[in-house]
Amino acid sequence: MFSKTQLDRYARQIVLPGVGAAGQRKLMGARVLVVGAGGLGSPVLLYLAAAGVGTLGVVDSDQVELVNLQRQVLFDTGQIGRPKAEAAADRLRAMNPEITVRAHPERLTRDNALEWIRDYDLVLDGSDNFPTRYLVNDACVLEDRPLIYGAISRFEGQLSLLHAPDGEGVGPCYRCLFPEPPLPGSVPSCAEAGVLGILPGVVGSLMASEAIRFLVGIGESLSGTLAHFDTLGTTLHRIALSRNPGCPVCGLEPSVTELIDYAAFCGEAVA
Image (tube, rainbow, N blue to C red; front, side, top):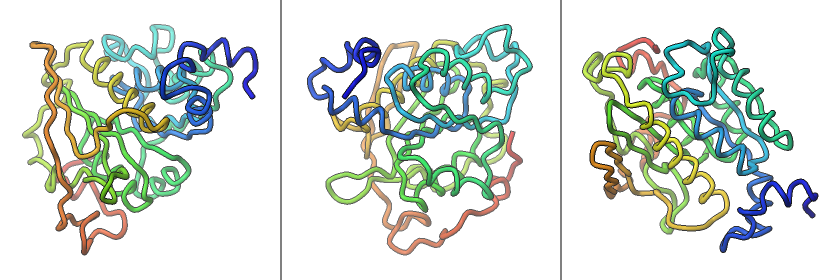
């Protein structure tokens, strides 16, 4: 049964075809871990909290800086200097006191990734460096957790649902898309290349939409698909993906059976 407060809060969602009371209960019972509370993590966390996802985990070891506020809409000027995970948790609890928010103001590492990820039903990766992306992917495959991946640069972004159940087992993982990391320094960071502030808002909102549809079980998922969004042309392209049977982590004969040194694998230190 829903309380009157819950019925009022989620009324516009409960009346949606395919959601209803059963779908809302699925959201309220779901546990979602969000890696990165930055440009992508901000809209992801705001919309998942508003939708009533029962437990949200926030992983981020950084502090709020003035340079963040152009795109990280979860924070305000008064929070500058605070740990992002804790500032995010306070904002989300204030917006929806009925959910549980767990702040992890630490870096995700090979020592804690498996323990943290296995406690959640779904993981969303909004990190901004390749070692963390490969770490999150491998941990999700090893713990058999679906992963929603997103990335942005300048005017373009992309996202996909990875290692998720489909009609033939599970879909491709991040390593199926990108078997090897790029050469160090070949992909500029947002600090170097810049980013249109609205871009992470759009891509992060699409990630939150994918999460809600996956948790409720409605619509067509992005499993086996990479969605590419371009703000300059307001275009969204879908690229078909397939699972790689030779993938070292999710393939038929995986060689990656435990977490590795991802900074060394990518030839760089985590930023």
